[in-house]
Length: 239
Image 1 (cartoon, rainbow, N blue to C red):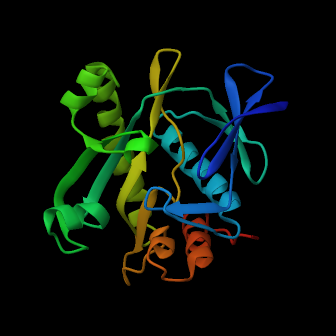
Image 2: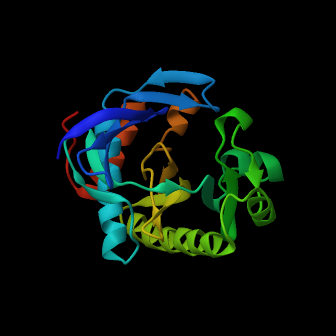
């Protein structure tokens, strides 16, 4: 597979064309941002770890019938993915009150929700990715009712699979963000699943093992990402 021109560079990844028009190469960066890009920094080895962690989770989900854009790993920092027509709606699944939900609703961080909560956000950096409901999505033409139904069902399925898997490894899936796109008419999971896009807590200590350590200046950021990799794979990272 030949990697060709750079198509897009975002906060955490670069996307390249390949010699197959239906496939892209994704390179994971060490750059870190928070608060819609207002806070910037770098986390050593993050790109390598997020690439491997995402590949692991995509493979796990595929084994449970939840398809994604993931094809294969190309290198420690790169993966090969199917080219998607991105649906500009981010889906956030929340199991425990944290972050913006705790602030919005006046809930104490760590409050367990009686059922998972789905939230939709309009994917637009210039607007700060505002939260929307399905009526906004339809009115703006961001997705069809069938697509919203598909991504909602998939998000809840992903939540069940990952929550159970992580629970067995002493981890709590607090909340996470998903992105989807269309490939050959089918809605597929895209983007990544990593400590950048998920809140992971240790089940016993409630220690945060994700990008909140960067957001909140808690320190131990690299170690947290390495610990997630170790918990899910049973392997020690060499980065």
